[in-house]
Amino acid sequence: MANHPPYSVILSFTGDSFDVRAVEKEKIAASIADSLAIPILLDEFDYKLDDEFARRLGVVMLNLIALGQPDIKQFMSVTQEPTDQ
Image (cartoon, rainbow, N blue to C red):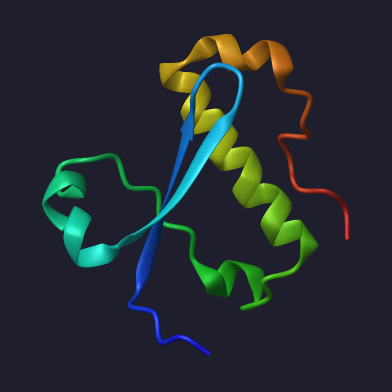
C-alpha cells in the first residue's frame, strides 16, 4: 500500500458537477490562513464517524458552497437538522 502524506480535501462546485481534490496540507497552508474555518469537534459525535456524521458533514459543505454560489440551492433537498437517533 502506498504511503500518502496528510491531505486536505478541496470540494468545488462547477455549476453542473463537483470537483474533489486531495492536496497535501503543506501546499495549501498559506492559501487557507485567512479563510473561514468551521471546526467540527469529534467529541460532539462521540468520536463516531458514522452515517449521521457523514450526512451532517455533507450538509455543512453544501451550505458553505451555497453561500458563494446560490444557484446550487435549486438542486439541494437535504435535512438541515440532525436526524433522530
